Image (tube, rainbow, N blue to C red; front, side, top):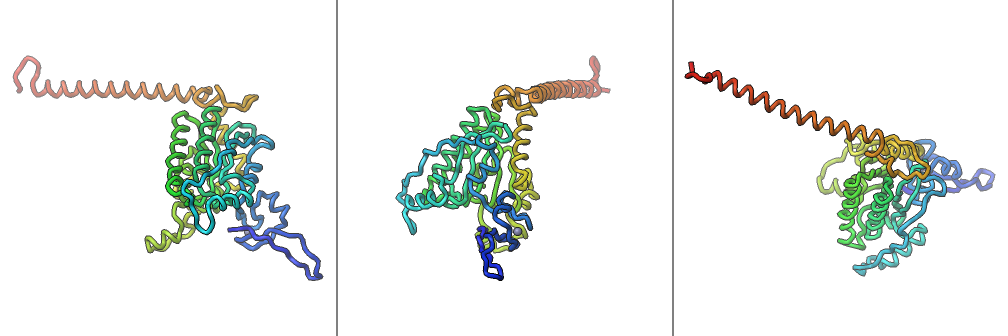
Length: 339
Ligand SMILES: [Zn+2]
């Protein structure tokens, strides 16, 4: 749903200040108030789409975000032309959004916890995932591993970028490998799914995070309702694909209103650090979970539990052997013929 800018003329002909008209409930909100409410309708709670820069401003500590990998630019390997040539389309998107690609990534801090933050922008060619989106996400993951800080990704996408054909589809495998690398190095990864998050992005890195949250009302699906309906010829349930329904089905860990998102992310990051207090640098370093007191206790407990389990298995085996010997003795007592 696209926000609509409206001008209201008052009865005496004077121009009223412009406002934001909610596409859900039609309520008109003064633009300054609407922005102060993080672009959420005060009447019905509809979360309007926001660009990557606004999102970063809402989530990262002021002045803490430093963009990286912005020099990566898309090529035109297939020399793809639809109504326009691909390079022309990219230039138009760049001019419209002020971004170089559909994802903006860099180092940041959220409530003083250092992290790598990657934010997609649906306004840039529908947030489609081409080679540059895949590469920037991969580098963001590598930076999180190198810095020993968590990765936070805000995902919004129409899916693969058709202008890059199979190279675009390959980004699903590539970003999945990036998440694998995070898992292997025990680097936490939190994904925030915002409206709309679909196609190849929802089928790869958006839903592979350790913690997956979404904004209220966000539409999350692989194929759109129309495609599914045409394929299956069945009526879809009410609220199909909504964040709330995905939550009820167990696909999400939480649905978090935008106003609470920053605080919630910060508490997740602190929790994943094992509850350790932030040090001066905000770097995780030795305070990382697994190395914290809490982490050490968890690891120690797990080892002790494994030892206990092994001992129990050994004990059980000895009991079984003893029972088998007794059974054998009852059948043929030692030193005598069966009775
Ligand atoms: Zn509304």
